[in-house]
Image (cartoon, rainbow, N blue to C red; front, side, top):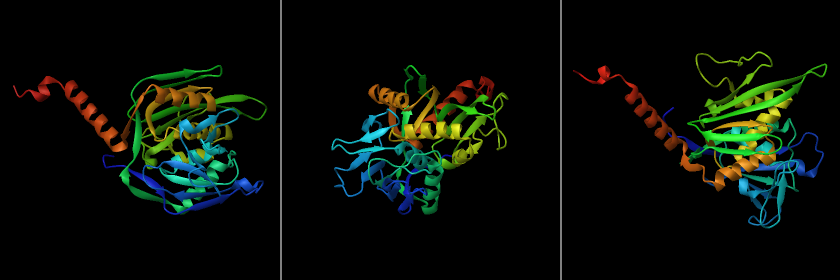
Length: 300
């Protein structure tokens, strides 16, 4: 894929309400937004500037029991990660989310409900290049529970592991790999069957992507939670990351520490998907030219 990649927003506003209707705060509306504005949350009934909370790593005010976003006016929001993951999987770069109260629903099934909501209204292509953060240096963070290591890569790759409890109490570790070239039709994941050492492959040939990201909804709960949390936490970078991420035992605190380290060390350079691809394609062409035997280029 060599054509330009553009930003996207919603084709029209979308509203959602929890089927359980347990709380008044289970109602939200997602609106289209201008280019280069990213995802922002605004509390219904507040002045637009005071109640606006950007979905960014530097707006995280707490990670205990999940990510809490906040702003300098004192407004906070809990539960954004699941919706952020759905927006990223749907290919939405810019949106305004209108919420009520101090939290939005973020249960296991909500990711799939959010995807359905976004699919119902569709997306609109915008006249601006899709932004990207290209990882330039290795970043590693650790805590008492695990580690996260991010290294440069031409695409986004990430490994996730989850523990699934089978009938009878037996625990199996299931592994998944996220793969993306930053265009949603060519983003996906593969899973390793417990004990098989083989990757499930529903595709053909040597295609690295085996299942579209939307099929996360069909994954077991433990794996779905791991995949959604990783995609949602990384969405707080403000733009997709081009890098290879390996994690073990990573929770909200570790993902947040990783983003802080990347930004503080300036280990990712802002660019666009189109420019990033062109740079790597040129580098690959140079490597191939250097590897070509002399007999292929020397007429003598």
